[in-house]
Length: 446
Image (cartoon, rainbow, N blue to C red; front, side, top):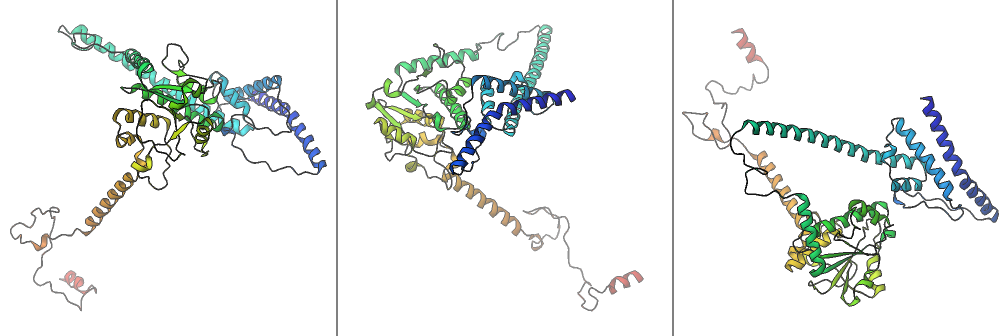
């Protein structure tokens, strides 16, 4: 334990030592500003996980490569010691290059601890999945052995896949090749849709990861369609966060035999401007009908924090035609629900619009939770439940009003009466002895 503590103190001292030049420089500059008579502005809180790179002020010194490598080794030593001490930090083998790049951008130790805990949760999930996979493999081997013993003892004909059967086994790789062949045919004959991937600088890390996941879903759902589009990922810079995350989802996206069009150029350099139509929710003109000769452009941006009309400004700057989906014409939005759609929902809407030409059928991909129709249905179900509750409260027994002289225990429409009180003679109400206990005393004496 003392060895680990000494190593931990050594690592913290090295981290502090590597950060002293920047602090001294900032201190000297602040002294100079004080001498000049200008007051230093207050520092605003910045979420470290939402910044792609460290935010330095103008008075800080740029970090050299040697200092960066030295600081990286210190941080690796810090993570290794924390993992050996049993903290919520994954093993060093789990870290990849993009993980260390993000760790270097974190300004404080608490931010590093939170990020290490996040990576530790991912590592634990992977380990649990591997354990479950191993258990499933053991169970499968056990079942195969049992089936093998049964087949050795059985002398009759065995029916099923791999035995006497009319059907052939279709493997997942065969289906995958067939779907890729369908995309190859779509590259030759199908209409084209462009996904503009030039908004990486307007998104933080979380939004960039969401955009990469939606781009992956666009490719997958377009491939599953019977008549897919010819998708083109334009303005794709492979050093951006979005494209790096997308490459982790689809590792073979840059292979020449893989049916995915990734272009670093702008779409105006690949297609004629007269056929391009930019789909942006900030314009005024609605898209009335689908034109197969037009090439529709969708901005690959997740704007959970930034609601500026960036796609509208870019379409105007490039001199392109613009249109928006007629959501207000065919749907009535609920109170407090946003009209933003994901990229894969946009692709599904355009696929159904191309196939059917009906907006009511195409807009079924809009989440029902955002539409007023679902709100009315929820309110109707709530009123029905409240009416039933009030009716149950008003239920009363009326079987004593019915003339059942032979069998008082006969079942009624409500329930089977267990015991019905009947009027007896000699049980008249006496006000003098009521609630005094005199009648009980007389009965006891008798």
